[in-house]
Length: 340
Image (cartoon, rainbow, N blue to C red; front, side, top):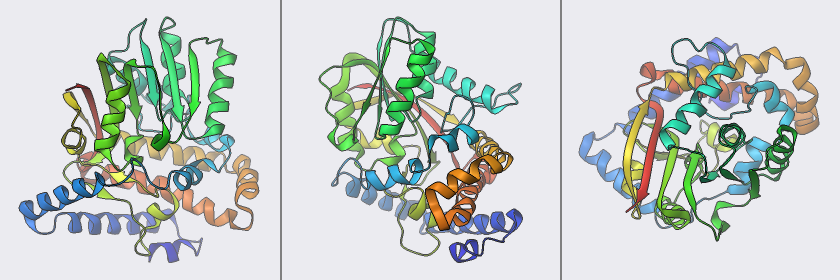
């Protein structure tokens, strides 16, 4: 129903947000159905299902959904570091630029990044973490992995512009990733949500860690319930247009799925931080509408107006999910893992 209404292209934000909140409540009602015993049975069944398939599905479709729009879109919408993931808004942080750096510095602290390490950035996006950390730790070597060639080109150009000689970038589908070297630290920021078979993923990551190495993972998740993004009904527009093949982990899903890695620390991070991040992206998108319109026209042609609405609604949906119940339902989880 919401997709049909969005296609009218005339709904005010207030009504779109009401519709999103209705879908959020409907999702929660379905997730909570049957009580704790049935909920646990469903999670166990999902874990079993995930372990029987490839590490990731629909990787090309998922890549196209976010990166068929040109890099210029993200340069206008995201902060100056092009961090396409949750930022950190502690007291005193008031701008998106500050929030980007605050989260990356928090990741550096929790991942225990130090000079002299070999660091793998798995699912590096536009390279915000790699470029930031490589400047802070010039004696460390950073290898960034992305499934997008345009991101590889962008990161390589930025590293050259800054004068970094400790950064290299690899374009690879996670299902086909094979690295002969091992790393002191592996950092993954909002990549695991695009995966399915976490058991196989954990085994792959474990094979790339040095014996005393450590994996740091940043994921968005639900506090209790894990589910797949599937396009089954008209209301599954996020799975259809933005998150094909994706998974919403529960906070306990990764530690339960990994059989070669043990969780050493885990941190809860309120969803309010992501809600604020998404609202900042939406504000930037609206502020730069004039500059962005030619890029939408070039990418989407006759569908440009429709996709403008879809992107704005995507950011609103992210904000509404993570703002629900003051950030207690959908939120950010940080973990560190070592070889078992």
